[in-house]
Image 1 (cartoon, rainbow, N blue to C red):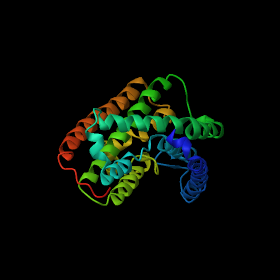
Image 2: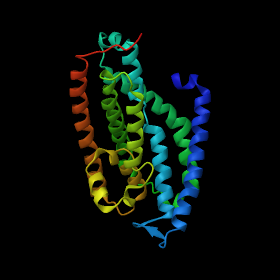
Image 3: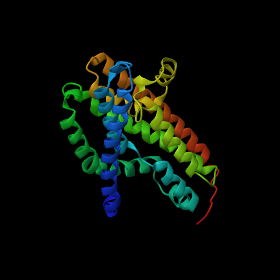
Length: 253
């Protein structure tokens, strides 16, 4: 209901998404045109462009902004009334994000994905992997939300949170596969990325849609990686939250 109240934001989201996909095409076309090889680290232009289109669709679906919402609640003093209510704040915020995600899914993600599927159909496979994609997307959303919640707890300790939120957004987009496919990273850096939770957000669901070489064992391994980081981030965020609420600093309100 909150999203439907701001209709102009809805239209700007669709327009901005289509513009971004449009710019991606010409950017990576120029990169591959300047390359001596038709593929870069085993990925053709078609593979790279499809990967980034899908990752961008997932970004619109999973991006929560819950950290910025938390900072506003903490800074205004509304957090005090929230904490005295018989509810779990972390689950309350997740419920709010699930509603926003459902709205984005129907109004932005699905139409964009249909356009991508029509234009780049040879690269998308939907079959038995659909059984793995759905739980993978659920785990990817959970990891994304928990990381945002964890970062949002910084607002308990600072009066200026905007910079932290921007850094978090840029870092995640840069090393999660949303802006550059992880397969194009240098070998040593890619090895480090394989152990970090960021690839669980965009890279794994995207590869499950695209990578025809993945068998059931490979898909289960990817889901296990996402589930492990979801558990780790949940425990870390709960511990950090329980410590943070012991010191509530009201900056205004």
